[in-house]
Image 1 (cartoon, each protein chain N blue to C red):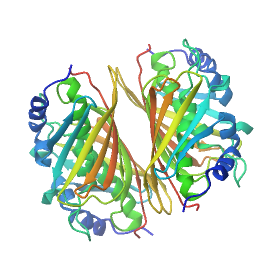
Image 2 (cartoon, rainbow over the protein chains, first blue to last red; image 1 turned 180 degrees about the horizontal axis):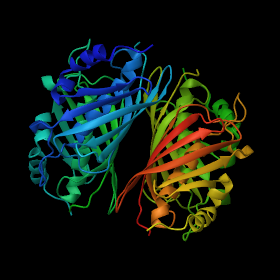
Image 3 (tube, chains in turn orange, brown, blue, cyan; image 1 turned 90 degrees about the vertical axis):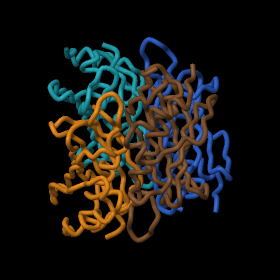
Image 4 (tube, each protein chain N blue to C red; image 1 turned 30 degrees about the vertical axis):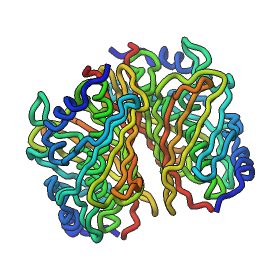
Length: 138
Length: 138
Length: 138
Length: 138
């Protein structure tokens, strides 16, 4: 009972915050319940400090939340409420863009659990997320 | 061995992402290791959807991460790396601004644990965060 | 629509694992949705190692899970499924017993969020938990 | 700079709580920083309730904590302190035994992040864990 990823993407793009982050879907794996998004660097997303060109952790968390939500939306048909998520920062997240790949671990009637890996443009794992979503929409 | 909150605030404000979020410190409780910040609504922080005027969860998470970090910085003297955090969304976060209050639960040599409560302008608890920070700076 | 704490306690005691842990309710605060339990040391709960008399982290996590569940059961009327929880270890948990106090932060129709503080017999905070429960029973 | 898994297993078995749980290492994958353990059912680990033969969530969490710690110990040489972990329960955990497989996602100087999957004897994923450990021992 999967939905059209392009139609879902339009719903996500209609969010001012998602549009600000510049998130773009680059791959959808329907069978795995997986979605990949990229987030390009823009000046407002930088954390600043001694080393230039690093994303702020809040931007990384926002990518994690959104791509995880999109994975659930493949079944639900629209963005769903996030119940909670955890993010672990493994390395500084620098470079021209970050890639977030969300994989659904469990999709129940009232609860979905999703894992999200974030890698930099050189393929290094920089952060991992795990979220619970409320897939009641569709 | 506390540091000057105003000096720390300048370091945080120097972060492009924190400046974009518009975060402002409104209270510092040195004895409790507690800090309160507000985040005013701006169009880019909205999640959109059927109900207008709600903050996106990623913006809420960013507030949580930053105010928690500031609580550790009271001792460390500067922003420190976030190791991980968890956010639970309890209600939609709407209104003209959100308030985040961070309280240090444990400040060790290599690890600090901080609790963060987020309330809306009517005082309703809308989200809770718990983060681990690496207080090695100072 | 609160339920009788003694009746709920009997349901919890009927769990072989809870009985093994020796958990006992010591206080119920109905208005706050709060419950306090103690877990006495017994040889099987020790983590061993160079310092004797410390509880294993798994036993601490089990206390956290159970007392948090009991707080939700005050409204639900019986033990409910744990969806997820996080535990942060702040100090070694030693001594004759541990005390876990659970406070309900949010009790919705399909989701409850509970905070749990663990203290040792000298009143030191040794661990903190935060759990999401599914309060559908009652 | 890996250590002998059998020597590490003896250190874990010396923990009264680990011995009580009956945990046994069944596979070590040195290159992946991965360890697999099984936990057989015993009456004290049951959660009770209407459906017999299910492990209590606290026992599942204890398996997660321990197998995750063992993965870090492959490098550290001995059990290390758990800083925090999160467990998500995806399905009831029933059957003759549970299997926990821990994979190290990041092993830094002061912090290791480990993912743990728990499956039942029929290979169904019943719980997932994610923990942060302090790999300072070895």
